[in-house]
Amino acid sequence: MAIMTSIAWVVALYIFAGLKVINQYERGVRFTLGKYSGMMDPGLRVVLPVFQSWQRVDMRTKVADVPDQDAITKDNITVKVNAVMYYKVRSAEKAIIEVEEYNYAVSQLAQTTMRNVVGEVTLDELLAERKKNSDKIESIVDKATDPWGIDVEAVEIKDIGLSQELVRTMAKQAEAEREKRANIINSEGEVLAAQNLAKAARLLTDSPGALHLRTLNSINDMSSDQSNTVVFAVPLEILQGFQGILKKK
View 1 (cartoon, rainbow, N blue to C red):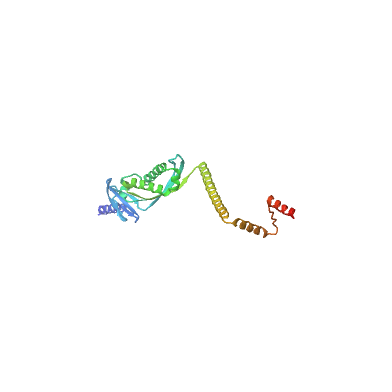
View 2: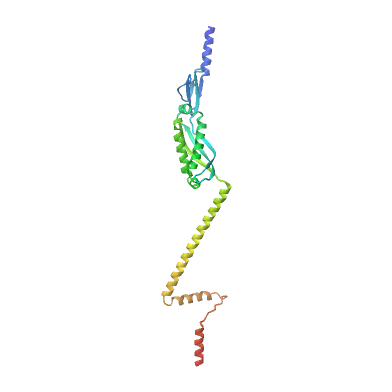
């Protein structure tokens, strides 16, 4: 009787030691004598010690920070680029069986892919088409990790670091571009003003008496202010004509 009781206690302890609790957002990958023997769903599960082993896999979306990477663009400019990546495990058994340390593997793949993508574009394209480059990194990493049972949901380039010298150069270039646009606008305004003046001159020339009316209007505008002094320039021929009339008298 005592032997049976001892055996019962040993069996109970053995089973108790094999009890495992798997959370709702987790899955368990079970191995029997080293061979994959099935998945363990959420809840209370039993793993036979010694004969079986298991690994817990988190199925939630993970956020991985892709650290700063020194990369050279297509036009030979060195930049520092970092990104954030969102991915999740689609197949727990593949993530455990097909790759060692899948989190580390995905991070390393994202880093190398980001450097390669940056090397395929110029600096202007990298700065102006950030979304396009992020989508390209996502597509490449997602395809490469598919055999591992990993789904890459999104990759976003967070920051593109430039050297101080390059920042100063770009600032000078932007300032020169603004001055160029301002000069173009001013010159276009001058051309338009000259065209309007030429048009007005043609109208005054083609209309009899229009020039005299314009002159009288200008004189009227100047005489409205008593502080103005108006000086008329009279041609010498007119003065000589008046002189001849006075001599005849």
